[in-house]
Image (cartoon, rainbow over all chains, first blue to last red; front, side, top):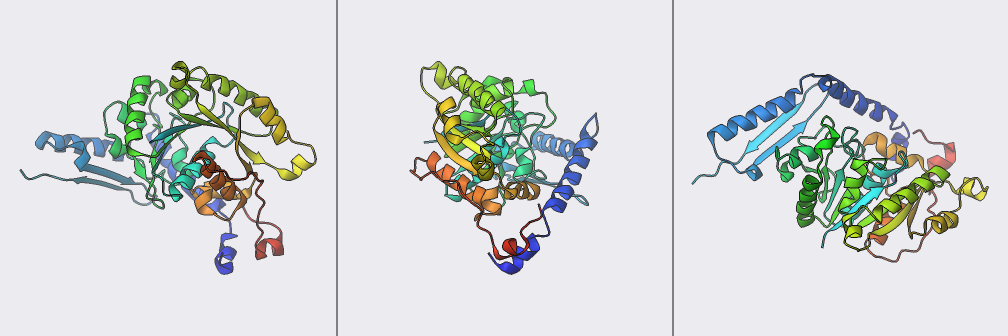
Length: 83
Length: 271
């Protein structure tokens, strides 16, 4: 392994662990005890709305979520087949 | 032909989730198509150990209840394109996982993957029995410590009676994975000896994973140790264990740390 990078690795992984936990627990606590899981609610409502208007196979609906401290991303990609 | 493998132990905190991630990654690194399935409803952690906790869209129970398709719930690893995760539900009641639901998901996974690795929750309750229910093979994660060995024996009994294979009169292939092994303490006679553990449990050994700070470091950053630190002793031990799972005759050895220049210079590392 590159000695230069190895030197930086020695600064430790604990701060990364703390940051990951703070983000995750913040979101989990917010949704526990009746709190609103905004991304989950949006996801379900949007999928229901899509299903009301067009018949799409679930295999052609791709949902991805990326939760971050400052911003989260909900991506819903629908492949609409032309007859 | 797909193989369903359960990673189990009875006792908590022995390294089931760490081993699931590391073995799954090692098999994927060898080119196999692998899915790791978290059975710990309400206390999921495999997503965190794999660094996928921010990307969970749907979970196992959503699939069982028909809310989502399996393909929508599977999360592909960002580093290994043949490694997938099926996360447990963090919020649902654990009774939502039904045997018929699990059976149909496992059947579908068999059609898509080479390896279906089920990460069992601790204990011997429903979650643990469901995780082992459809297994072809089992890895019993054991620490060289009396309570862990006792619990492993209990789990071996369940594997021989409560699995679908056992009920059909077939055998579940069983392996012991010894984790958190400290060679120095063993040499001082402070730890149960490997031969003694194997004699007590009468199950063949899959591998010996040495106690190592690399395991903690890998979980801190959310990367299986075989990916995060391939030259480390535990990573090499997991890679060997994965090869044995695939039938290779890899000589058993206790992997030692290869110390780098800075390790020797400072003699310590930050966790």
